[in-house]
Image (cartoon, rainbow, N blue to C red; front, top):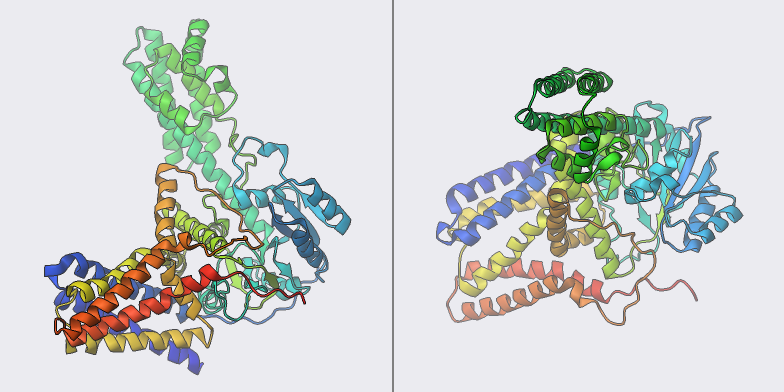
Length: 638
């Protein structure tokens, strides 16, 4: 209780001193003569204060849970997801999962459909599931699709999800299932821990701050989220999520079809040549309006689609003697033909149809095809239900956010109950971090938690805080450039390095560090702090690639993280050339700044402040040199 009280005092102190400092920076210290560096710097500092707010808010309600008693008779399916990992590695996880003490069934979900994996599963006495024929020529949705495929082929009340390399403890279910005694708990997440990482943790794979105080803090706001593995989920919650997503997709399809039908009819009515055509098109227009009004009024989807289809049928009866051959010719010229009556139209076809100049009879035939297509729902997907979210390459966070928005709860169980394999080379690590960042930013752009219905205020902020952190790449550039500009060119981003600056900045800085120390509780977090800055090129790349994917539909590949070391004959400096360039520039700035000071061409206080700043940046960035030369942990073989 005392530690918690001290932490809250430190949080409040840090925020108050931070607001005092940033307000002074904006109102009294910006050097507007050098606005091109002064404004970006104060914006970066403002970003950091907001980051402090998010961290303090997370820590405010940190929750430590005990170990509940397991239920007596729950049914559990253990899912081990794999694509191209080595068969022996997957089998080791499967055998360990088979030996979990609580009654369960173990399944290998092989997205690679490998015969050797099927044989190994049979020999080990565990189940084997791969994609059905329904998935052929349809979106696969990576790991989320693999899990969704398995969900419809199993029936356990609870699901333990493990990555191919995450070897579970025999007690993983007995230690976690008791949390589901609360019938609104949908998810229990445990830490991800890696057994092939030594104490130095050069690649920053262990995340003790996240899988500890941060997840415990989010848990206090009922916002601890799914991290893709080492988690138990309630099937009922996932299936409810799938049904809700199904209804949402159907409603989207219906609304899009009605909009297209209205546009087609509007254009066709201007070209109608005789009374029967005008009457038929008026009937359809009225039917579309009534269907749209029914949807807006909250009527069931079936009622809205029935109104639309009945209107189209009535109009068709008025024109039964129309030239069928001419209608088919018009449809064929649009590239649809008879297929329009057998499948729903995709977005591109709907847009093309809405913008086409059809004859009244052709328009009616096309609208009739639209009405009939409503009977076939989500034909473009292999499974109508998609319980695990497919809007992102990181299905875990998106799924958890959907569960929370539906009123379900989550639990963070702070006990290592599975041991996995971390990346053993720089390239693999960068690939993994890029995917995490891209997926998180996809969720932010497609389903921003700040505007998502069903989430509490705390949940909105907890999810957004994680997404917000990946914008730090742009801030890092400012923090690297600002001291270089001063040391090399004498350009001050602040009015002066005066007493007013230090009397505001230093207390804020010290309070911020105190807050961090109290929150981390002795957790080793320096490596994480280093990579938060050192990976700035990855975070920037994630921002633009995720934005290009969401806004311009540029593909974003899902790459499975290799579980073995990528052999390299020399350090992969090309992967970290931006960081190496930054180090070179910082060293040059250091030399230039000292030279200018020795020649009496620079203020001593300003030079000292910026030298300390540059040295800190160099210490942080030094990790990339160790990472580039890293060849994995020492072999355990004698």
